[in-house]
Length: 336
Image 1 (spheres, rainbow, N blue to C red):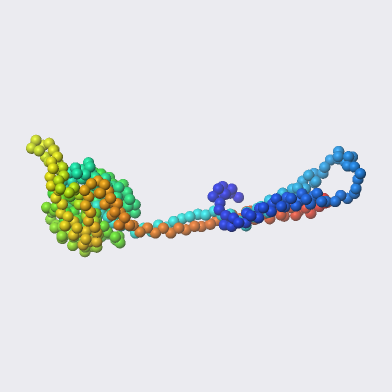
Image 2: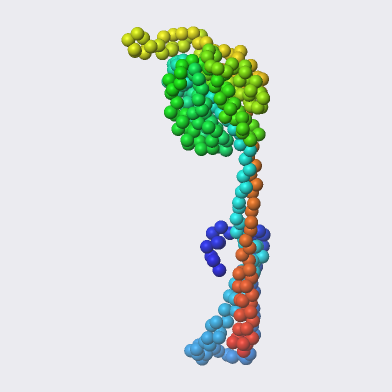
């Protein structure tokens, strides 16, 4: 018998352990019975018998009680049904395919968010990726043109590394919102996921690109892709980096220009939602809200298998009973 299994043992019917209170009763009954035994003859004194040796059969007579008690205890534990369990799980996940479309134009270096809009957006995007364990996520960047920085993937480590490498100036400057949206739709066009989502983040107005934002919107609607739009920037003026004639960079206050009507139209017509982020905290809250809105369906089916271990105890009880009977009617038969 492998005794290591008893470290993780469970009992199906632990109420049977209540029968163990009968063990003291059995011991008491045995002692009382021995004391009530009547002697074969009466003697005026036992002084002359004190030096006589005691037979080994008399000394070992309590062994019969021990065997009976062990048999009874083993039988009680067997009735309690000791068992070990093995649990396995089957996980069925309906993941969501998501594309993060991120504006990396020069205006994203404005410092109304800290340390600037682009770095704040990258940090929050990586936290969002960490929260979407079972989803496929990709990254599209755009400014004057658009580019797939990372196709949709479940390898979130690779995706976060690609997000970290994003910087302004990687593409021709400008704000091609239509191009960014269209490229994101292309990444999801052949997706088999039941839910397809784009999170489009920008801080400006569409001013370039080969595809108009409204055309890209119609394409997204055709493929039933939900678009959440995020407008980044404070209300009013913000410190923008400006290149001076000598090549140095200086921060100058400029008006924040954001095409909110377009952002709202894109989100409403695709079943998404528009958000405005004027601070780091608001941007974090926006991604948190999107995370709650786009819940991934995960079904976990648990299987529990039991292995019974009462048989060895039942055999021990039977062996003790048989041994007691054999000894009682052979070795200890002549004893009262």
